[in-house]
Length: 601
Image (cartoon, rainbow, N blue to C red):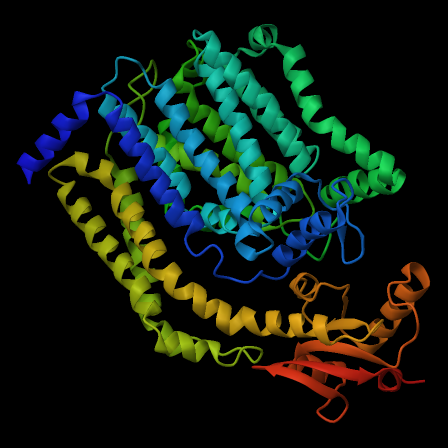
């Protein structure tokens, strides 16, 4: 074994390009496993993905790439970048779930590869190549292998487009800052900063410029370099690039829609979202702290040690020359400022802090693979903090493995999907999840025990975590995806498509209860989302009076919902004509007279 490893090292050292190229290929393979594996295996997830994907489908079908529309009306909650990327994917690969998710997966991958490249470029030139490539690979793997980046990297929603563009902008700044003595790289960094700030503004709005701007401002203030950097920055070409990316669509959308666009997008989607609770998503000021831990697991366990290593209480250590040693400080500000910003907002959703997570991943990666010692900093000195973090890591993985193994006994049923729990019990999924987690616990325990005699063993605590996460992706995702789709998504998708085919001319389609926005996409027609007969009648009246979408009173309407939802609505077995049933979901045709009877006098 040692002879084989020696031969491999000799082969890698023979050509300086071999090691980084091999690492790059391995990282691309890891991204394929994390973001592209079974990407098309799931139908659209409700609610947000079902809504988001329908907008670019409408753009492609209508040929209008300026005004986003959903469910028959203009939709200004988000700007256009994500819609354009999904619409372009539809045009190239056809309209499908896989094509819808492909741009988000590519955005997640691009951020991972950019982080890898940045750390390679900024590493000291006299450092051994093995350490440079190892550090870059480790940090990129930490970003790839966490629940948040995997989850949103596989979902066609706006969060990954914003998070990736903000991250690429900040990585561009890091390149411009760390390569101050290399003009070509500095220009590349400034170009990336301006370009991706513009993309972020097209993806979400002003926050796409505000957040990276605040991170950079605070970093430069703490480094005592604000005025010097302001003087050195090529503002005019950067501003021209930023405005060239952002202004054309905003101007076109304003020209096409006037104040309706500006008032809704700037007022409702930005100011109101920050100052008021929208869509019933409130949260206390500490709302994101547990979410930060969960979304960045297992790496979040090591964040306190990574922050402590910075010695943040001694600002003088950050006043030296610019260089790669500044990356931990930038990563810390990146993480904390974005989390603090969204903590101050009234509307809170876990995905809002996705742009902060690459900062956390970079912090943890540089904990295990730091840059060479700079003035005032220390190498990773194994100590009680890292050892305790490893112990907590092992305990959490052990608890997760035990929960996975025992899941068949305590998993509950869902009246809307009665067969799902039994299918999970009969599948090998609990074992496939428990086994890699248990093996990781064993590896962590061995490393912790060995660290008493060999403290350097603690520097490898990242390896069992990365291996277990990759194994879960390789084993669980291919087994879980078809089960999840068949048991929870296929019934709605089938009934929605049937509704699109069976609906009479002008016959309205109503979804009862949970807002399954994917029904609009799969049925190919406008849908009303209601929870009661009163709400249904009012929605029908509003549509007919205001937009003409359902012109004519009609004698019947289509209802789609689960058995409990339809019963709560007041529709029993004999009140409607059953068109189709899939598990506990039904598509029925209800006489309009019966709806009026349900409302009452």
